[in-house]
Length: 326
Image (cartoon, rainbow, N blue to C red; front, side, top):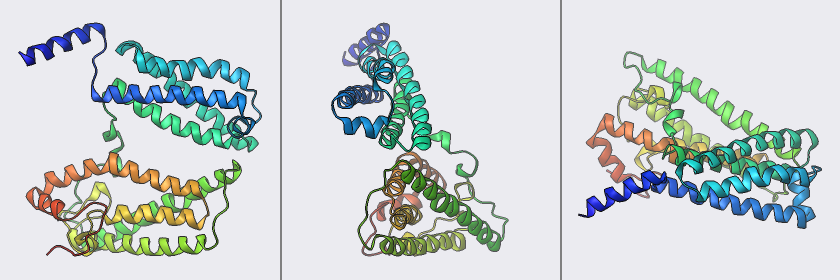
């Protein structure tokens, strides 16, 4: 009887065009929060000169509000409350407008050096809007879309010699560290300065950053060496080890390379005295933990079965064990 009632309720909801799921409920809650935040921001723009200057620079708020209030605030409100099909249209309007404003404000702030605070807020709003749009339309965030090319999980070729794996690992380190720990942080730091968002730092911040980077890099190299020499593979997802590695740093923590990479990013941010680079590193940790790690662990479970299940039970992901398992 209970099942029949649930089925009937689903049919009725479907006829009404509003089938509720935890994903859509979360998306609607986000759009409601975004609408409230947008409305509060516009009130502040017209009442607090500091907010207007920090987020809009020299832009006239009246014509901007004439577009943003209906396309951002009202559309977000509609996405939160109206039935399913209509909410998708409203969410699409709000998300598209948010992305357009983010790009335009990015260009404006970079050219004029004003409204940097508005860019940061809009980047956050764009990220949230896109995620909520996926939840509302697809019922999930399609994280598998990023697992392509070098990020697709598959084992390394077993016919390669250990020296070939070592050479491939060294090349990966040069490329990924160069891009993620040099190029991108320098660009982010330059934008932070250009947007006038830099903040004073404590004395010794740069030295602390050097210490963190050196320690984290040592951990990353130790982890890469363990994977390469004991796992018959590389750290790259598309050339994963063919043997489960539980030696070296993997005896005390499951993902030492991820921990090392995040710590390196934070350390580089400290070295550059850039809070935006630190935020970039922490945001990367969220992406890795929620978008990549589940797929990686599913791949390891499918490949190594009970051996990986026992290892996962014994060793934690983020918090090192004080005593290594025997």
